[in-house]
Length: 130
Image (cartoon, rainbow, N blue to C red):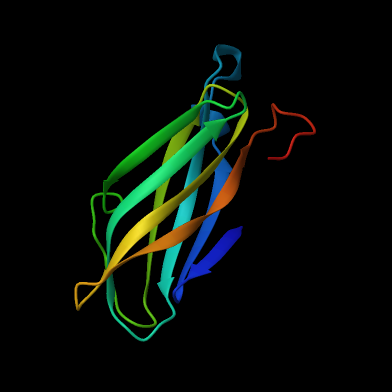
């Protein structure tokens, strides 16, 4: 589990290697990651967009940007949380992901929330931890 808090927004990530969707002999490795975004603050905020930087074991970087998450722009009232699951494939047996969410207050103020860096490790990468 990986956690990071920015401006009273706690982001927790749990990555899982998906052996049933991976094909190591073909250089295809797949992970799911569960994300929980919790508003620990006093103001209501909306998640407007996401940015991901995905780096494989060879140092190749892929960037992903877009509105919301999983087709939604969730509204987070104080004390509330939003959870979702997504995934990513890589051509290597390990990698790392990190990113940000752009949030907006009801007054229209925009701010960035950090997503903690997390390892994508498979059993096919012996002895290596990102």
